[in-house]
Image (cartoon, rainbow, N blue to C red):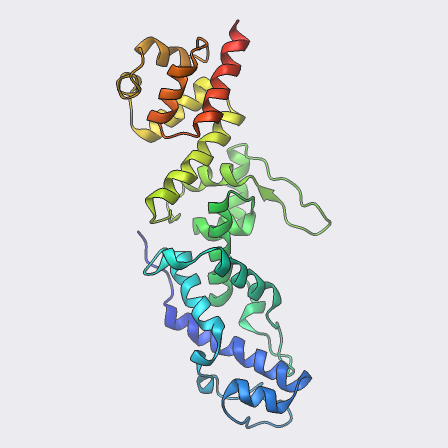
Length: 288
């Protein structure tokens, strides 16, 4: 698994600039007393309070966001304590990335205003990964972050593979890709770091295959699933305890109406069994 291209400490160096802007806003629009209490020291600049103070003076242990960012880093890059990032932390990180102060009273921007900053990459990647694992739709930027690619390259790849980008619901809102389809696309990218948790990977694959079975013909979808599973048709038949002829009928897209056999195949492939059986039933009825 590739290593992150910047360290957690390098992210924390940027985070000190982020919290400096936060304290600066509190001093400018709240009170100096509250800002000093938050910062833990008295500013050296009364005209632009806390906007230009040495960032190393901001002790990150005073700020809850530092702990959240540490977890977000691990989760985004699937290292150390990645499993501790949960739905509550995802909400905290999303609120932070959307609500952080973007500019100091001096006019200097916060790293949170720069899409290519370390802090933004961490929060955006962590939230994108969480959305992926929830089965939510993803933007081009989110796909690019998870795949380790440029956005233009992502657009070209999606277009070449015939993957549709849905327009945003409101003017200016970015387009999105179906989350299940996105996971299937990401798995083919060398730069994508899949979850370290086996159950999460299995759940993601079930979602991917459910989308594949929904979007493509049964025979084509099953052949793709078999390739991913590194199973031959005969091996699947033995694993599912069904006749080889039944598996052959599935790959041909003309199965008989045998619910029990379809269920065993779905279980053998660790698919979303009700969805898979429904697809088989639809194909069988079409062939009558």
